[in-house]
Image 1 (spheres, rainbow, N blue to C red):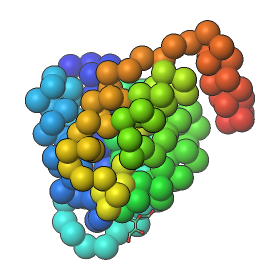
Image 2 (cartoon, rainbow, N blue to C red):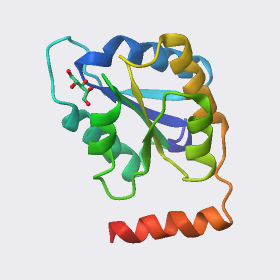
Image 3 (tube, rainbow, N blue to C red):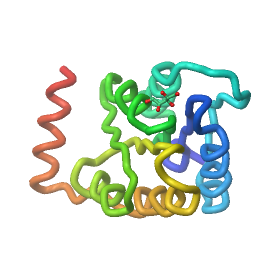
Length: 149
Ligand code: RB5
């Protein structure tokens, strides 16, 4: 396995079970899931988990990141503070496809209190199956990269 096949997963306490279900699902599809936890149910702080996963993607160690919290919003906000990260929260498959095709998203965020297991897995599949379209979208992604500098 190379970094191109590796997906980092993290969550806060609100999404441990769904995160583990997703990790198993993507592993069965041939991805290498790097699940950085947590595994115990104590209340924890979503900025730490969003930032930790984002660091693995930003460094090039992992191709994609999938992060979760109750709403998906908190971990997404934290991840997007890390230079080079483009993370969107999705509760539908259309958005999951579009953040890859148009925004070249490298991280997906999910709300475990928002989507059920079946929809979450469909969203993950839509995200991973889609490809960045480049062309005019590349200009816009480059403009976002400029905001990091
Ligand atoms: C935890 O209660 C909750 O605030 C967190 O999981 C998340 O939804 C924050 O954005």
